[in-house]
Image 1 (cartoon, rainbow, N blue to C red):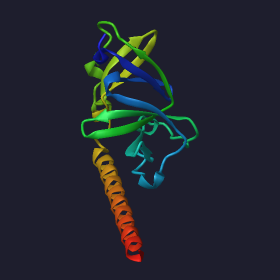
Image 2: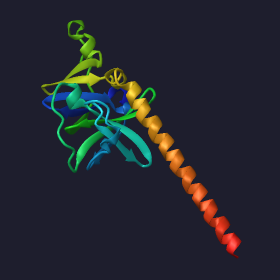
Image 3: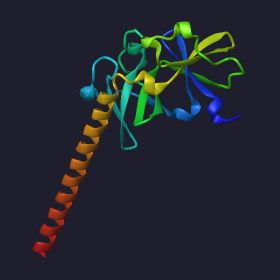
Image 4: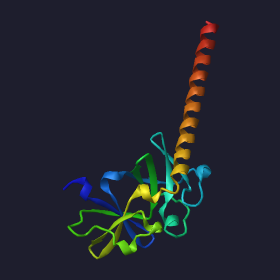
Length: 178
C-alpha cells in the first residue's frame, strides 16, 4: 500500500481528523513554545526543532475551541506545506489508517468557505474522520507564517555573523598578543 493511501488520524477536541502520511514530517512532543512570535489566536508561537523554526498552529482555536496552555508532552504534528513547514497542535495522535474504496470524498452540501480545508471524509471503525488539506487550512494565515519563519532566519543569520566576527576578533587579538 502506498503512502498516498494512508492517513495519520488525530484528535482535536471531540473531532477526528487526518492528514496524508506523506505530508507528516514528524510527531513531536514539546513542553512549551516561544510565544514572542504569537500571531492572533491560531498561531500561539514557535518552536525550534533541530535548528529549524516551526510556527505552531492551534487547530483547536481554528475549529472554534479554546486553546489550553502548553504543558509537558504537548503533541505537535510537523507537516509539509507548499512553502515550508508548520506544526499543528493536536490533543492526541491515534493511528494510521488505509481507507477502503468509497471512504473518501466530501459531500458538496458540506463544502463552504469555512470548510474549504476538508478534502474528504473517511468512515473508519465507526469514526467519521475529516481529511485535512493543510495548505487550504492555513491559507488565511500563510503570510504571517512566512513572516515568522523569515524573521527567525534573519535573526539566526545575524547571530551566526556576530559569532563569526567575535571569533575572528578573538583570534586576531590572540595572534597580536603573541
